[in-house]
Length: 370
Length: 83
Image 1 (cartoon, one colour):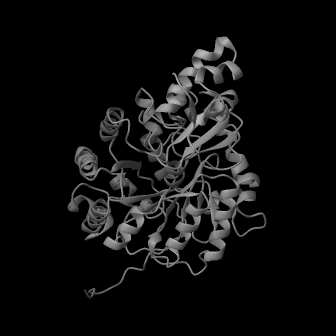
Image 2: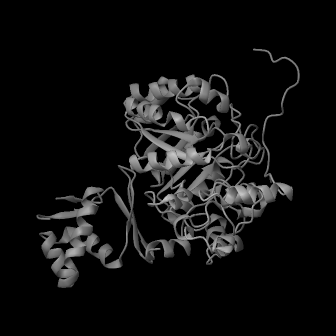
Image 3: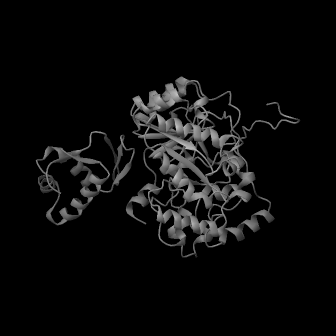
């Protein structure tokens, strides 16, 4: 553990970056959606409230935000907020399913500085992707990529959540990104939101995790948001910080202004406060009880006797929480196999899955008109 | 490293207890400057006619080789640029 990581674990006066979900509204219904998005929440931040948050981020010298949702571009003030952030020195990377990236929009995006676009896709083929993200979503994402490339946007990002069904397509995904001059970004599937229901069928197998680990070592420039630090217990550490940044260097602001420790723990237990509270986001970040406790030295708990704890740090808090595992024990995807044993115990105690707020569009009965 | 260098104008520095965070708005890369002395060196690089002069003014002789290596890596990530 270096001095830098020790200091980061104690928390900084301002996050390094944060995720901001602008709306729970979404025109897709991905089966692993972290925020169970679908319907807009009537209490979502107004344009003025959102701008006040940006003012705070500027004052705190937060260099950039990762904007997501839901599908953030469906907010009618989306580009107004993006322009306001960029104009105030808060760079923006936004995640989109691509549905609103028309030719004209792509040209406008290409002309904006300090703006980064990330298109989500969860497989190298329509069959693999659409099984998770919905019928037609692969074609939609590819059309958006085509538009960005045609507008000479530059190296946009292609963001993939790694599942049991797309691990075998890593090389094909890399080729897809290379074909566009894009950067590939891979993140870990979490059992959060609707992912709580699908995680058991979708998360990579133990053998696939080993394949993924070696693939990442062979492709050190792949962006991961330091998502896979639990794999570092397999040997050599992966590039990146290899620590859980929740409430220490990252956090999440949800569409109604609630502040959570990270993008994967939308649950009352990890809600630190609201940007609407007195003192705003700054006070939540610096003073909230939850974030203060996350910055205290943690105990290795059941992992203390494992020789790999220094490498994996016990893994991901959200993955443990939503599978009903104790936070001071092994990650459910522990590469030493300790998680699988713990999961058997947790399901026997029927403590999983846990659930946060649900914004899913209700399932319609009967035939659907097209 | 030879010649005159400076902090890239597209880079913002945020002071931290371990040194500083450096963010390049152009290439969107985040870099950790892991020592307050390195931060001071980077900030004042542009005031000196050469890297050697900047090092001589801010860093003790025995520490200079490691700071020179740090500057080389900062040049690679475009935190500093030749002027």
